[in-house]
Length: 381
Ligand SMILES: [Fe+2]
Image 1 (cartoon, rainbow, N blue to C red):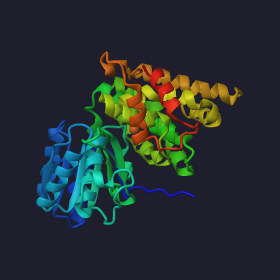
Image 2 (image 1 turned 180 degrees about the vertical axis):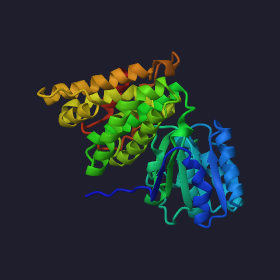
Image 3 (image 1 turned 90 degrees about the horizontal axis):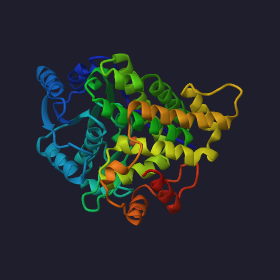
Image 4 (image 1 turned 135 degrees about the horizontal axis):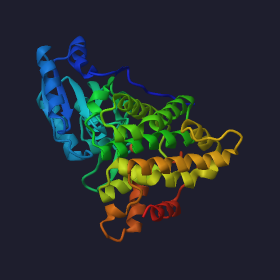
């Protein structure tokens, strides 16, 4: 038994961001809450000019600089309401999209972001019309109903979600990802690969998430290295943007041990999410190997490294080696060391943090517990 939530409309192609004002106008919307990162002022100005031409007002929100916390979200909700906005536009990375997703929901449902985290208060009202435009290729936040928000009081990153929180329209314009630096391209690409692989071996995988996951893996193999080495290669950028989208669709099957570790540990040591995923993904694959041999062999095929006639186990091992090779080739992080800055990590605090945030997740193919968190954490040093 399963269900799947997708965007109502997906708009893919070069310069498709220019269609945002027309879409809002068609829906009869008057004033847009425009959440954006601060890294691409030219793109923002271009969209604002288009909105003005179509007679749509806007209220810009630039406060989302890193992964969003409660203050950023709750202030955004206040701005949405006091400015009388009637729709939401997010142009940015996963943090901006997740923040906008939550701000829109709060604008119609009331309360504070923390009320809704971890199965808290229920969403009871449809959020405003929402367009999401990813400017990085990794989180797939435009394809999900989930937002991850850091709680200021306890430092924990927790999710909140509802089927109506997914963007109504996702605009995938590869040209807006062209300026991404190599390091960010590599890390976000590893995040997308983690979504694809973890969801594929998840105990909650469905035919739709499997289809999305495998296609994401094929596209990442085809184009991640090229996108890193040749940032202006539009075909590679297009493949990665689609891979990120498909990874976002796939992750509704649930996250596995790589994300179970990466999400809380990233919050503890201020590690960008993609970097944390890059560190934990191959470790997760090795840990899960015996419980997912068949699926890893299929992943080896998607990665183009399966050898016909070989045992599934050998091909599964090839998949793991290929992920490690790819990570090395793009220069993505392999160890937590650099982020610990010489500090001796507090292992007990790490275990408690994982337990309080992602420790409830049970769809990893091999059973995980406190000893596993400690074991994998040590391997990541
Ligand atoms: Fe992720």
